[in-house]
Image (cartoon, rainbow, N blue to C red; front, side, top):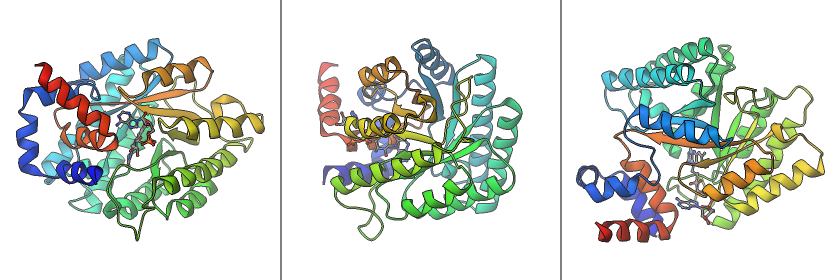
Length: 319
Ligand code: FDA
């Protein structure tokens, strides 16, 4: 109920305008967002790298509605790749396809993504395609597949355990050692497409994580690269200790090296757990979002946990 309310708010243009200009909201958003500039994101990544944590940098933005905006977002991603090289960051980059034109037409999105992947390939940087709402799942998956078929090996995708289709998607990806970030899913989806109960989403996460770990057991499966930029096949993106423990249990059971998997978490969430995972010797990557378009991302984070709404209200009252 609360989740639906905040997800609906994340799409409301009028509320977005009010919240973006409201100083307490901007300050509260900083718990989850590294800042509004690339420099602030780079500083956040340097701090994480010092703690043994790799990063993926995301310039916030989605649902670009004109070709000029999509072209600008493409250039913005290229600037992030340049900053990763210049500052020698243990980081890669994440991108939403609706940011670079997916809602305009598939062809311009494909062109913009190829431009990013070409640049990233020369730079030796990996690009992760975030997954958005189910209206874009098939299109996102098929553009990702076309990039793999075009010969790009520096690209991976995100899949969501709340969708019924994900098991089939992983079966296909495992045939060509596709690199997958597995998450539970952050959007509001219909019962016809997604498990409505959290317990089922969690159970499916374990099933899908097992499938990805099985692919990672192959002797030629890619490991985390030495520079921290290329992930292994499974990137398990969750703050849920039970899901993490389940995956660790499998890794131990099959006596797999820790580098066959990486755990991923969001900037500002469960920092204690992020450090614990590093101490245990597992690769850990944090998603570092930045930029002025933080509104929908912030609303999705509030939607995930009622305690965040309380945090938001108390930070407002403290002003
Ligand atoms: P769950 O929601 O069960 O939370 C488990 C515990 O984590 C909670 O009890 C709490 O302690 C902590 N927690 C979780 N969310 C929190 C929050 N917002 N604030 C404070 N504590 C919180 N989704 C998507 O649809 N497409 C995508 O591309 C991505 N990409 C992505 C990248 C990375 C690195 C991560 C970690 C997550 C995503 N997600 C995503 C979001 C994901 O789908 C999911 O909504 C969140 O990770 C929350 O789910 P958990 O797996 O953490 O479990």
